[in-house]
Amino acid sequence: MMPLFFLTLSQLTQRRRYIVVLLLSAVPILLGVIYWFSDAATRPDELEFHDALTALVLNSAVLPIAALLLATATLGDEVEDNTLGYLTLKPIPRWHIVVPKMLATVLSVAVPVAVSGMIMSILITEGDINTSLATAAGLGVGAAAYSVVFTWGGLATRQAIVFGLVYVFLWEASIATLFSGLRFVSIRQYTLGVIRGLDDARLQDTGGVALDFAPAIIGAVAVVAVFSWLTERRLRTMDVP
Image: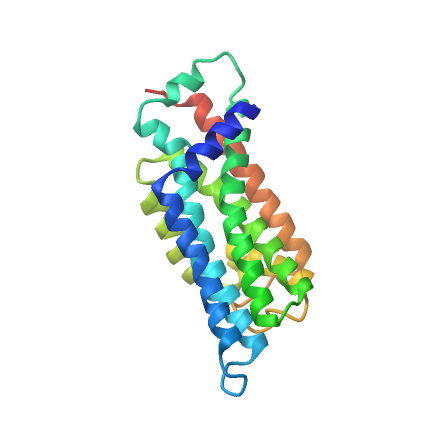
């Protein structure tokens, strides 16, 4: 499985879309730099500014779009290129294909986004390590959940980008935010819940956080498990060209 993991990681990080991911991840850092050099008398409150960037820029835009760009390509591009058959013809269990590809996808998404969150937090909070690590950890959890959902989407439909955009901007940003009961099935809320659980001074009034740490972790683990199984099942039952 390790050769497939490294092959997938190489494929994802050498695509042009990875440059887009890196540029997206640079946006919060740039905003942090601007905050760092701004006049202390005129710049926004540290707590409010940090929470706004975390909830509205990193978690609602950078993270899901980065995951969408990369995860839909993990298996979806092989379907488009008719190369998936080279993997499925091998006499190995399908999870031997799914697991390394999922891990490579999660890593390729989580690293730039989590590093972006850490650097942004360090700049805004003037070196608060606890806040920086909490932000990175929450984004890592979100990266895992989004990655498995969009990897399944890339295998299940040829319109995976459309599916992902509808999911992110209609479900996550609108419906799941407006109706509090649906926040328990929102990856956005899992991410914010983990960050707040690790640093309880943050995200009290931003992003409509309704989840405590434990439900957020349980929800994220459930999403990863269910969509990993769905991806394996889809790969096992589909007609591979």
